[in-house]
Image 1 (tube, helix red, strand yellow):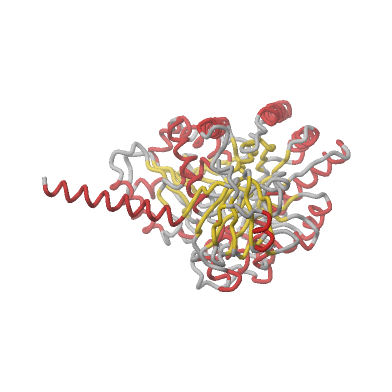
Image 2 (cartoon, rainbow, N blue to C red; image 1 turned 135 degrees about the vertical axis):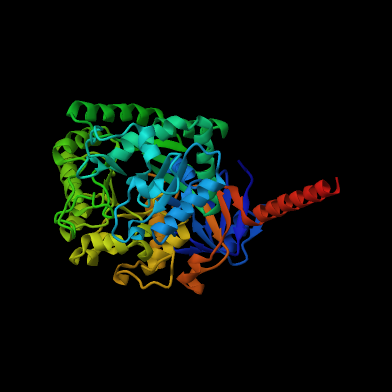
Length: 564
């Protein structure tokens, strides 16, 4: 850590606070000692080290309000199928990946879209046709289902007699009952995740976490809310904390993932386990904030709980119904835990809000800050209800990218697509809106995320028409939701999220100015510098110099090899 005084001057500093903009910031003891006009900064700190920002835009460090750190690190190493346009493209990519990794005992992929199958259903035979001899696991883009081949089903021990878990489903042949190769919701969480976790080492997890941290710092993220923590992930974070002498590369708040059991006692017992963790892990760099409950699934695979059926006439039951949810929510609320509820379907948000109302009535007037995640389809009445209850709306603009909306819209197929991802409705109702990415279900970089938030256009294919542009956000508002409000969502409002005196010196310097060059520049703007607690954790100039030196060293070694 750097205890010197540093004056960053001559910038366009967006504070995400009421005063709006500043010219200079003075950093001392990891905090912001001054934010304001340069003339006063020079009087206050005449002997400070001076860094001339040369008119660059400075933002508060982004806080990813919803992510999965270790999972993101692993995903960055998997075969990316998001750009695959059809089955042949998917199969070709898998085949090439297999040929490039001949010694890998199993092949892992991610981010394929249901729309790439043109209405067809994924089957194990489709993967077997190109990789029959090794297990293949392909996470859907939303990471709520996984597509596997026959070898993977065999490795998992799944056959016609394997039962569906509570809240999940094994895809089956309607005649034979044999598993088809699709595992939905808790069938993925309870069969695939433990198997892959068992096969991964602590070193693998630590490397994945380090990779996620590196990418986040390179993209201007200084804090993250991990939304599906388990024992392996916590252990990895604590090892990183020890290795960093009590610090991490960026701040982390985490929600422990709850597992739906078939009885109230086992469900509530998990809450008491998290209470102990919450009391033990409460540091300035890593803290257990509360619990995460996945009430329903996702619209793309028709597992989100909706008030009305999908376009094919089917619907989905919630993973957590109201009866099972109320005791857990009431116990967690009474203990002061933050409750984060995944609720994508309009019925799921209704269930979650009803459970929270019950807990608030039962426990009375105590400090609380609960959240609902995603809220992709929600009734207007429940938007107002959420605001009245003081619940934070935690949403991810990247999920609304028009390039991945085709199947989402087709599954609903009616008036509900006209109120998709209604971000401004929440703030108009008086709720706090916190923006994040939900990586690895979507790309993690915040600037393209802000592009989608401010245009409702696609960061993947900007030529596509915007989707419901009336729900776009002004740039300053979007940035505040991804910094100030994201920090508020995890009770960091006194620590970070704004560039004001007394808060942590967490900020990011951009190479371009989206306020003057237009929001399209968010797709090309690079991060010049990321500062966390006053320390420069990423410097683009230094990184490029190091890369150039590494390339030159490789070239020199190659020349020596040729000479020998």
